[in-house]
Image (cartoon, rainbow, N blue to C red; front, side, top):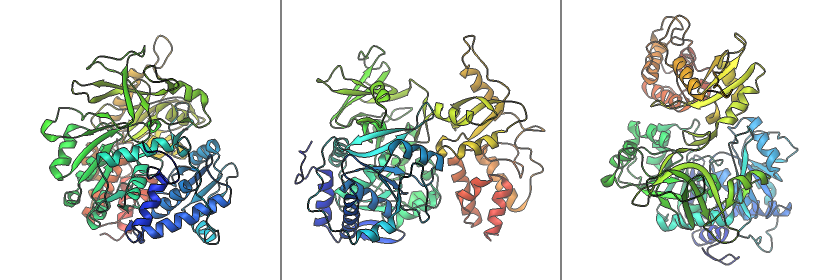
Length: 599
């Protein structure tokens, strides 16, 4: 890894500034508001960084950024990093209670907000709108010297799901991010002719590569800025319009995107990244059959900075099942160990432990949890640590790793790591719920569901979904909540998770009857009839009534995106996904279409 110092080309901040100064007139960002050159981006971020430093913000501090993928979000992130502080991403779509939990734990000195309206945060943390901050920054003189950033200084703090119901903040140091950016540039160089689709929300770690890698090496960011995400048709339109060459998808989103006719016209794509979920070989094959592009499957917990492994997919040598997660990125050591921390032979499953330059410092304010997950590395030097991922893998004879499963109750739901304990804690916070079990179904369209115990007639599944929507990020909200009197127990007194899974499966796949979903009255004609017909096809149910709930029929958020997208295409409408989520019924959907004037 390159040496550190204010003049070293290996310093991430210096890389950003050197590129901006050497290519000032090149386009750095394309968005719906127009193009921003490297000179303009450099000056805006520099002035804002000067304002932060004038307010005493620098190395060792945390500064929040409340923004979705946007020009404003990039400016704010660059400014915080150039000031020497760590940026704390806060997604505007998160429930206020979740944002408050994060803010209380992280205690940022300031939150820069791209939102057009004021927002009050818990803990008396000042919130400064970016428009106001940039106006104020015009009168602040530039500092005489850049901040002295050290390898162990934090560059970002990312919060992930917590098993106790409280999110935990991962502190990522500069050395980890720098290692990942420089390795990526060696493996798949980003050049001046590249354009990357910037659509990953900042709370997810791959967004750091989306922001820093192209701007460090002179490429162009194309900001999606979608009204509803993921809008596959809008995504394809943006890729075609700007000749996007590089894009990252979680497999579930990739599958939905490839299912659209417009996606096949995105012929400019030359590099496609997959991560966040297991990548089926069938989906990988579809990618390489659709595009003349190189496909990389990548894996890495937030605790090891974006990616720890990579696999360059070769369709000529494909295997049945899932695509391997591959080999270690530079500066990373991978250990497949048994429960006594002994290496397992090739082909024998074990827990993956990760060591090397990419490790996070630990969990913010949680030395106990840090010590539990970041343990001494028995194969490394004095003081070196390794991270216990909880992921079970096996090593193939060719040296590549295959993902097998988990050792705990953490699951992956459409690319997002979810602690089932956090979902259960949110459900049991309801006054009528005595117990809750969350799980992921094991059918072909696996999604997050929950079985709760409550007194008969006191609460229903829809009410509980609305309750947790106000407390959890959308990927953490169960697609269906099934209410019962009690939870089945094992002789030991513990919850019988196998029996719960059977109960949920029976509830979700029962034949529609007099009081079952799918019989909400005689199906309507006209627009409502077309909506109902599409729901029957997508959800694979026999009947759909006008007041049936999309999610109670077996839908989930990604299917909802697909459904709305198909309806808008078929009927020439432009209904908004957020409006549908307010009341996800056939009647509401038809009303929105008719109000839009599509018919």
